Length: 302
Image (cartoon, rainbow, N blue to C red; front, side, top):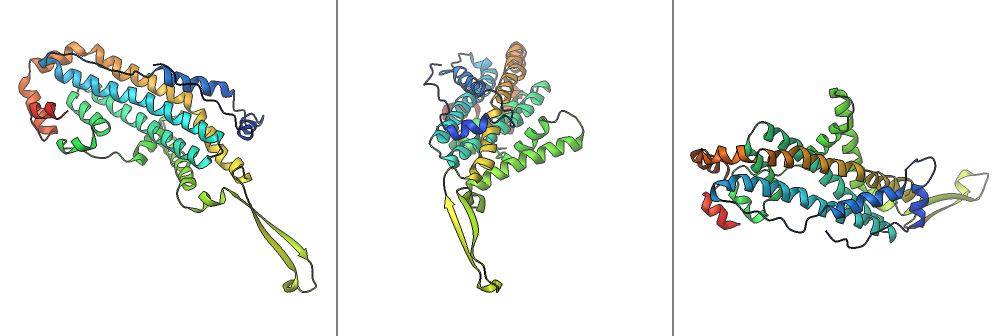
């Protein structure tokens, strides 16, 4: 898809933080390359043509490719938003977009694991139903008998567990707790909680007059406010750096989703089409199990 213009960080304070030798952040150009790759992998249109008996398969393919492609749009937009916000010192906005990146990344890992297992088990209608939780318009949710909102904390836990290099339950649990803590800490800077306000402030306490009597001594308490406060530089920058650094892992996850789910679904095309062509009653049973309308009604509602 045609690019809309590269966005780079010009905030000198943040760049100095990123390039600090003790952080070992790597090249910022790698982050730009990852973001531009996200943009280049977007597809403006997806189109499918099928015969009636092939519809169940193409319904699956359309749903999974739509979700996958929409993620490229979403992450490209959010990363550019983070950088633009950093450039104008709007760090709350940067954190807000950054938290959305974390949420969508976690959901990608979560839904990818679910779909991978359902495809391996050849549970094709359940595969589509799982995708419907994320792709069906809100106005059409009434057509789903088993609609259930996926809680972001559940997705974050699975994401954390996936980062574990060891397979032990203790290690997975620790990683899940770490990801949840990062998410909750970022949320504290966005919600009307104390970190959201003190991020701008630096307090100082100075003794102006000493006296033999402690109660008579004079002190001056002052607060200085700045978007580039010390608190912002030591804490907020830390989370923004982390979220930007995950862009390469995110690309790997999107590529893995394509390889392990979409490509395999395409490889099994003939088997899936033949299965439903030879078992029309099974299609009807699955429709009645998962949807509140008939196949014709559901098709017309799209």
